[in-house]
Image (tube, rainbow, N blue to C red; front, side, top):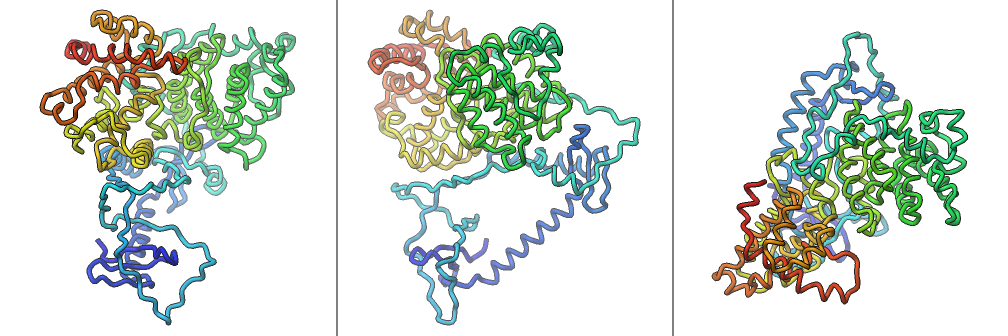
Length: 609
């Protein structure tokens, strides 16, 4: 570790350097740090030499080929060196996933001696743009005295791309790198990615019906077009397949008859404008707007503003997937499909057609499209189920901005489904039956002294620390360090409160209130839960029971009735109603969960799982 560290002088906002061994402060960057910078440059050069081969997609064939930066050779067959290097990195990534130790924001030592100005040193002008402070791993660990300052979050944070994702700028690369000549008659199509894909153990809302999962002539999108398309006269001159083919030009009227005949003012023009936005996003109206998150938000906003357009928007997107389309363009269409499936559902008329289309694309030979189809299903099934019971909203900006890597990287942790969380953790912990974040937060409450804290789970954590830790968890880190137990306790309740679908779904809410206090009736309800929900519920009950021990209870003053009171509203979600009804329902919610805490035989259900 270097003795020198970089700091900012608060009075002048200039960078200076402090030596922890000698106590010296100087304005000029020490030679030791310069040497360290040069060493890093050399390491990067060496690493670049090792990575001679690069994997690239050929948009004309949809296949991968490999380019050697050193020799200029292009080949279809994957080089042995690249395969060995990829396996090594994959192993390292899995072993190190989530193990980065991320501390809360450091508190700078105000007693640090300021640098002594030297008249011979020419300082930079205050008018210039000064660089932001850089905290590298050599800073001493922060000391928290209980008064935690509000964290400064970087709004420009972007999720790094993992190795397996092609470079977004590969169009420019293809102009410089010649694709290989396909002279070998033995080149075969790549195997279906579904052979290597394992669904999360809880996926499928039990099981996807065979008629939706597999080829079904009755659920082809062309059949939907035959029934619901606006241009019925054209169907006599052209087939539905022709009407559904890709178009680089704007449409003159809505695709669906119901939208064209709608009495809602301007609905037809909104449908036409929406297709123009789709063309902009996929790059058919210039490169500037291609993949622009703001254009995507316009499409989603229009859908929420006009529910009559939901099916129209989905059909416009499906139209743009048909035909011979460049990989970049097709990938952007699927990005919009995923975002729409995260924002509003299809109608009952379109639902099964859309599900069948997405399921069939799981077997798509183009790996990227298969990945997007699998990820799309995780969004489509829950939002279709919540069609009549949920108020829909646009995903957070960070989710929209990172949609191009959504199937590969976790962009959120709060506010999604259990299925999505298990999807993210399938590669590094496939045997874990519950989301790892739940176990992590439960362990953190105990490790930070939660079992000896008065009012634990009732007293909230500091807002600044809770929000900062939540942001880190949402970015995939499960090594957040907490200074007090109320923070992970608050995050645990917030995690359950913000789930896309509550632990005990809304469809059972009224029945839960009716049978509150009757164990036999309550068990009939929890037996209807999906396996993942049941696994999480039994884990949580066992965990909360640990706080009811007399040795713990005598300190925390939080018995089972109090714990049931604070947890019940987060596990049972009341459908939209008045504030008065929410208050009146609270005692029965508490009684329902308290009965399970006191009497449920968790081992019986754990054996079933």
